[in-house]
Each structure stands twice: as structure tokens, then as C-alpha cells.
Amino acid sequence: MKLIGRIALGLLGLVILLAAVVVVRTLTYKPNAGADLSKVKLAPAVAIDTAKAAEHLSQSIQFQTVSNQDKADNQTSEWDKLHAWLQTTYPAAHAAMTREVVAGHTLVYTWAGSDPALAPVVLMAHQDVVPVTPGTEDDWKHPPFGGVIAEGAVWGRGAIDDKGSLVTLFEGVEALAQQGYKPKRTLILVSGHDEEAGGAGAQAVAELFKSRGIKAQFVLDEGMAIISDNPLTGGQVALVGIAEKGYATLMVTAEAVGGHSSAPPADSGGVLTLARAVTKIAEDQAPMKLDGPGGMMMETLAPQGSFMIRMAMANRWLFEPLIIKQAAATPSGAALLHTTTAPTMLKGSPKENVLPQDATAWINYRIAPGDSSAGVLARAKAAVGALPVTFAWSRKPNEPSPVSSTTSEAWKMVAALAGDTAKAPVAPSLVTAGTDSRYLVGVADDVYRFQPMVFSLETIKMIHGTNEHMSLENLDRAVQFYARLIATSTAG
Image (cartoon, rainbow, N blue to C red):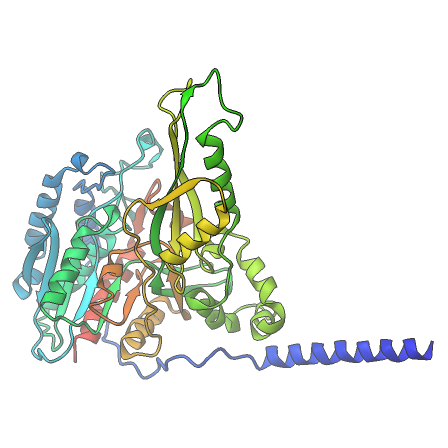
């Protein structure tokens, strides 16, 4: 009994020691020292006519620059009308900048700085929008291409993604040009015409810039925003994307003999083989990790979170599995921490009573930084084992982007202005979708993704959905941000 008592006391002592270590680490927890933003000199606010800006956004929405699945359905004249409208609506900006048209309808504007030795700044916003799902038009409060100004907002497809950025960028340039602003560092605006359909325009711009030897100080595009109800802190946070996932779709095909469905083979042919293969691939998800931009975001925001969140992040050696489990409770949280695997399309027989000669599944991957398309393919092959299937990419994969700096001068400017705009903490994060900026990673070492707009986790669902709209507060906020960013970054 004495021995048992000693063991129990020893175990109790270890528990107390462990608890003490956890508490002390929690109370003294500080994330890795980030860049000092306090010394960044930001340009002052500019005078803005929000009502006029709202009218301009309304007009831009009425141009139906829709990128359809089948390019033959696109109304290319709508892009021409938008281009003419931009020139008429922003005369001071067009007087200050030179304009080039690349790859048919992608726009490149250059506001030449007085010091050509300084690396230029590149700001991006695309012209095209996604279609409105047929049959859902009546679900909109206001016509999706009406550009109606009501309820303190501008309504319509593209109000946020991404004509909201395009218009507010031009509003910012127009305001500065009207004031007689003269940049020391060159500013380049890039507006892709087909971001929603693969980004051929942005790819052409990247090749053009490389041929000219252009190396930018930084690139800023859409991608992340200010979240008013961030789960980690419970409050407002400005999230700046420092990387984005890669994109790849794997075609998995099972060959079969085919024939009449009245006399099926014992294994039901290629469909069953394909079903087994897809199930195995989908069940073998890539492991979740707290490294990379997703982990950096959690580490940066933990000090502003609850005691439990601080305790978990301060003691990752003990709580990492629980942190990952909690983050993975939502699909968006899980997507920050690993490569996602999503079977999306199937093809089999052309008729219900015919056994297919082959069956194919399309599996879409969003590849996390640190992973690669080669790793995705190897994982899929290992998952199916000896099943008789073949693999092919539907198109050349886009690899995940490099991770941009969170200590550079470019980061300091973007982060400081994002924080000042949000009046809230700033954290790096990972863009789980794709943007045109992924093609410009060779043009600049630092590529950031941020829209200066406030959304709740609920309202952000309107992007690519029903009732997309830009509040007048966000409109004003975005014009100020872009004008101040241009004035701050191009001052030299």
C-alpha cells in the first residue's frame, strides 16, 4: 500500500507540474515577433463622393461581362462597353496613365513614376463575373444585373467579386489624379478579363511583364477581407492572404467490356471499379497540419482569443491534435490546414440499359502550400492500390503559390493600412480559392490578397451566390484604402 501511495503521489505531482507548465506558458505566450507596423507612415484620407462612387459601381454592374462555362456563350461586346465606360467615367485617371489591351480584353494601365529605378507596384482587379444560376433570378431582392442602389448598398452580380475592387481602384486613382498627385514609384493596374474562367489574360500579362524585365515591389489582388466575427477572437480581424492553394482536377478512369445491362458481369463492369477507386481516394484525405499560412493565422490571433485558445496554441506540443480537430469542425477551417479532395463529376454510359466501356470520375484538389500535384497523384495511386484504373489531369495543374513575406516593407505597408482600415488586428492567412495573382508570382516576390471590405461569415456567402451587394460603408472604405495604398506605396 505504501508503494501504491508513493506512485499515486508521484503521479499527482507530475499532473500538478504539467498543469503549472501549461498555465505559465499560456500566461507568457507571445507568437513569433512579427513586423513592427508602428513606424509605417500612411498617407492621409482623401475626399470621396460616396454617392457618385455608388452610381459608378451601379453602372459597371449593368455590363454583363459574364464568363460562361462555354466561352461561345460570352457576350464579348459587353467587355468593349465596359472599357469605353471606364475611359469616359475616369478621365483624370486615363490622362495620368497609359493603357494597353492584352489577350483581347485584359487591361494594363501604367502610371509612370518619376524614379524608374524603383520597382513598380501592381494592383489587380478582374472585369468578369460568374453567371447567375438559371431559375434563381427571382430569388434576388433586386435584378442581378440591375445595379440597383437600395437599402444602403449597390446590388448585383460582381458588386463584390470583383467590379467592387475594379471601380474602387479607379475611384482612388481618379481622386489622386484630380488632386495633382505625382507618383515617384510606378503604379501598374492589371484587370484580367477572364479570371473566373482560368485567367488566360493574367497569364498573358505575366509573360508580357517578364519579357520587359518588370520586377514589382509587390502585387495586391482580391482574396481575403476583414471578417467581423472571426471564430478565433470573436471580433473583427483583417486577414491578408500571403499564399493561395494550387488547383488541379484528376480524371480517374476504369475501362470495361461494355454490353447489354440485361447480362451484367459479376463485378458490374467499370462503374463498380470506379466507385471503389473514388471511395478509396476520398477516404484517404491528406493529413492536416498547423504549419503554413493557416497555422500562422491561428498563431498570430491566439493572443486576442479566449484563455482556452491561448492555452492550446501556447502548448501545441500537448494540444495540437485537439486544435486540429476543432479547426476541422467546419469545412472552411479544415481547408486551411491541408490539401482538399473533392469528387465533383462522373461519366458512365450514355444510356441506362447499356454497360459503359469506360467510366470516369473528376476529382478536384485544392493543393496546400508544401504539397504538390505530384504528391496528390502519388497519394491517389497509393489509395487505389491494385484496382485497374488510369489517371490523367484534366488540364495542367496550378501548383500552390509561394508564401509571401510577413516582414518585408511591402507587407508592412499592406498590413498597416489593412489594420488601420479595419481598426482591428491583422493576420496572415491562406486563400483556399484561386485568383489571377497566382500567375504573377514570378513578377514579384511578395504577392498579397486582400479586399478592404468588412463581411461576417454569413454575409460573405453572397459572393458567387444570390443577392450579392456592396454596402456603401464598404464602398467608401475600399476607395479610401486603395487611394491611401497608392499614395503610400508610390511615394518612394
